[in-house]
Amino acid sequence: MSLRDTFCSSPWFHMMIDHDGSYRKCRWHMTNTMIKDRSKNVSTIREISPINFFQNEMKQFRKDLLDGKKMEECSQCYLQDRYGKVSGRQRQLLKSGASLDQFDKSLASSPMAGYFKHSMENDGHTDLRPLDWQIDMGNHCNSNCVMCSPEFSTSLASEWKSLGLIEKRPPKNWTTDDRLINEFLDGLIGIDQEMYLQLLGGETLITPSFKIFLQGLIDRDLHTKVTVGITTNLTVWKEDVVELLKKIKKVNLGMSVECLTPLNDYIRYPSQIDTVRENLDRWIKLANNMGWLKQIRITPTCLSILYLDTVYEYAYEKNVSVESCNFLEEPSYFRIDTLNNSLRKQASDKLKKWISSKGSDTIKSIVNTRNPEFIREQILQDAKSYLSYIDSQPLNDEATNLVSFLKLLESNRNNSILDYLPEYEEFLRTAGY
View 1 (cartoon, helix red, strand yellow):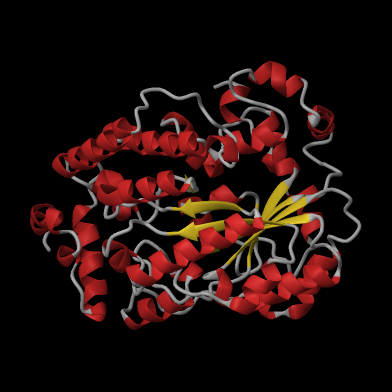
View 2 (cartoon, one colour; view 1 turned 60 degrees about the vertical axis):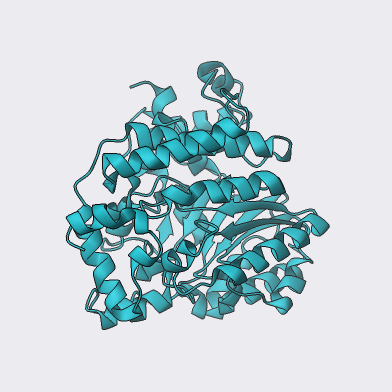
């Protein structure tokens, strides 16, 4: 395997802090690898500064990338590359002036080539500081999304504990300590380059520390040189938070929805589609007025894939890009390839019909998926990546596990997937529903 197939520039400018304060090398590690790592002895913001971790404890990771090693932690990006979905690796390469189509030439001429060379000669060390952050402020959330886990939702943690799925709640959120937040923000003072802070929950708008972060940026005059990224589940609207966001120089707005039918209420329980639609329209209007970059964020599963075209159609009409961070891997029974061939064909045919309705057969690969000039092309590209995944990914054998999990949730929620997806009855009954 060549360096082109494995190298990523991300660990020279990006890192992540998880909800419990532990450090992660990359925002795209939020899959099975990341969840397994929670049981390991990992460094946290309580013990070591973010800069120290970035420059020193990520040395081996950078060295392995420079040596062309295939990394287990990077499996999601490899999977996305395989099916024509723009991976996080490709996006990070673009930020450093490199691309896959002219990899050797673009990497050699990259403005960061000297930094790569320095790390190669110094066992992966770098003197750089991260400019691209994902900050998970905590798991404070009002939703119990079926494909989510307690690490990302306090509401789901309570439900799972009551159902016996977990023995204890996830670790305490690091942002309950104002000192740690202030030390992190103070560490950004003096950086004379533009920075990107992806601030996530839980549900960001109701996460108590979110307002502390925003106000802290404003108080330190950092709001003029940062872009703040947020994602909301569209169930709430907080005017006081919106007013703070308006003071930030640049905002990247993510709006999470799985489909624009009542099925979304089942998947993102206990949301209400009318409220979700109302808030979606409201956020888009605000983003247009403020000049914010905006995206609809999706997490396609075996339940939502049949109606994924409703999101694409809405986004296409509104000229709003659509993005999923990755192909869902965990829980494995929610993966699209859990479906039988009949339902996969239905989903494939619907996506093909929708793509064909836009008159597009081939499109140039768009790596900068946030470029406002190519929003509709990006939507079609994303749809085609899921079409490729549906048609090519091997079947798994998780249907009975899917049914067992849904039945357990439904025993507490008093609902039924068949009321939302009658098309799945034969598939689910066969698996024991």
